[in-house]
Amino acid sequence: MEGFSMKKFFSLENIFSARNLTIMALLVAVDVVLARFTTIHITAQFTLVSFEYIPAAIVSALFGPWAAIVFGVVADTVGYWSNPIGPYLPVWAISAIVGNLITATFLYRGKFDWWRIIVVRILIMLIVTMGLNFIWQSIYFGAAAAKYYNSVRIISNLVQLPIQVILIRFFGKLALKITERMEKSRHSAE
Image 1 (spheres, rainbow, N blue to C red):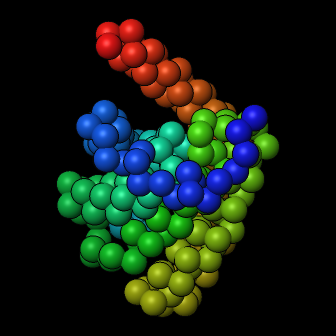
Image 2: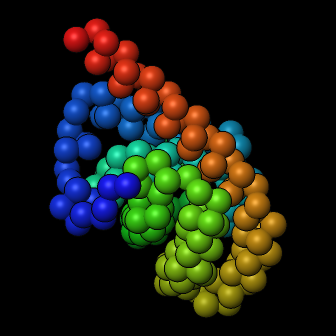
């Protein structure tokens, strides 16, 4: 088994190939479509159910932390401008970046073990959803609204947790198989 290397973990080589940029662009498009057509909002500022985490998890796991950062900013910005709901708040991109970095830390190089995915989703729930998103909502909408939304969000996240874990594992392993086949066909063509 390959040991952990900070140099490999933070390598930029995974971003700058045409193949990887194309895959990331396609996953940004999937993210935007999922945000537009599968998201359930209680208000303009509060999302109850969303499946946007799937493309973000795939990019973070396949391409690492730098790709996760780029994906988080691009998907958040393109997603907002393609379907604006409420005011544009750039700080939400910070939440996307942190969530993707957590995901990359545990799932990078296609490590879609059950326990890793569960830890990722719980950390994102605690750090991003209950922490950062609470701060952003408090700043923009007031502490009372943020407290209300956080109480609803706790229930929503706990209900969604098993679904998220199953979907990330399924689509993550599927994406891993597809990219491995692409790599094999590329090498056999050379």
